[in-house]
Amino acid sequence: MQSGQTGTIERIDECVRAKASAMGVRPGKRLEVQTKQPFDGPVVISVGDSMTSLSRRYAQGIEVTVD
Image (cartoon, rainbow, N blue to C red; front, side, top):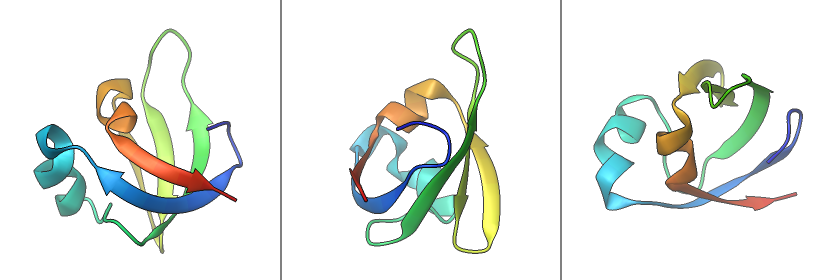
């Protein structure tokens, strides 16, 4: 996904599910990519009313249907 794109979280890989869930990132929730930092830096996303950053490795474990 690119900055500004939105979508619905469909599935989260088992290896990142616990940490993602603790940050409010769950299947069925709407997600928006705010920024993607260069050089494989973190991805800043908003889910609901909260904003968080995820490492690229964690972000790749989240399957989203893009609007």
